[in-house]
Image (cartoon, rainbow, N blue to C red):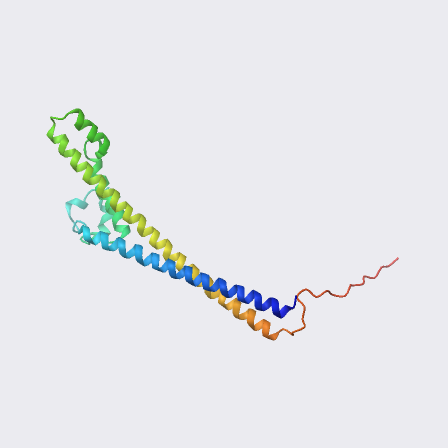
Length: 195
């Protein structure tokens, strides 16, 4: 095969890879924007605000160190959702009867149907565990958004590097003589033998 033909074919193949990487980067960027804006929109609609700085709600050593950085802010990011779910709601649930585990509180309430305080705990546990789960799901989607962002960056960087290699391939094809062979056989090398 002629070297020039090989260079052109390899460069055209590289050009296809560049297009695929740019498309993948574009889709990953769209995925990042979609997931990130969905998380922010959904969390903002909940209108959750962290307790104010110095608030007794942040005094607990299980809560304060994790939430003080967000004191007084609206909950709008995945990281904030995780902190609120794991270090505010989870702590309060753990202080409830049966550690706030809904299935246990519910089973105890069904076993004692006349206990109105326990019935109220069932509602609180249900609401707390549901909100905690939803906030952690928002956090998970924010992680997916971050992964999509990094995938987009990697795709665009790889596309740029590949585009440079494609350019070098076409440049080399222009400089290669038309009759140059890809794997031209070299004349045999004679090794002197001494006796």
